[in-house]
Length: 267
Image 1 (tube, helix red, strand yellow):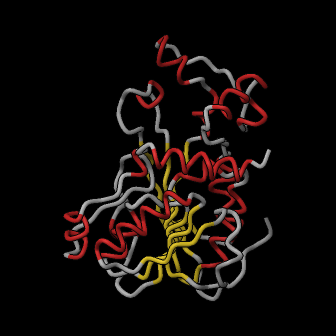
Image 2 (tube, helix red, strand yellow):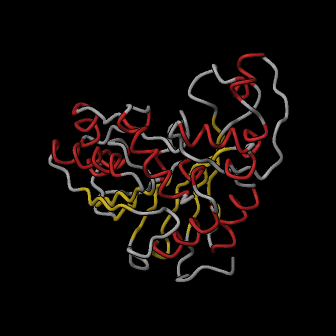
């Protein structure tokens, strides 16, 4: 199975179905962003601290795996030169639709978040990358590519899921009110699910997911050459998800590419 191609098609379906991450922002939201009044998320619900962005006007920003007509148009309205790089044609179409509707310039490119070879070295001042790396088999490749395309002194703002969430069957937990460990970490749908469960998930057209250890998430950023400069935790969208009542389900980091650093370290 080509897992990347499967996820492209799956996210096209998610977008067409109106996923919460696929609902374009309104003209009012864009108007406020033009006035400097805006907020966006890397994780389910906590807004990214505004100081994490620094000065945006005139800066080059890569919205990585962040399509859907939300973050990229807002950052463009705030004055940034934005490139939206996403696997899903439908998610990119929503960025393009909002940009055209509001007279914004957003360059849209389709591709795998772990392969940014279409982008030049040191091309961006900021990479904005939400927790969509849950759909990437190896998040360390993502960090290395982010480091490469950032200019020295640039920042990576990244969200990622708590790996512990993948130990549980959440449909079962929400039905029974009991969290029971079902899976060993690291988790991958392709390897961790029983063949019949995987077949059902693929047949439903759902995206394939992967856990990533803290070593891969945070240690991977450090080994790519970044210096961590910010961190916070977040919960789920609401309290309907049992695990979110007991622990954070997502993390966010602000990582800086040191000045004078043009290449990543060894993986």
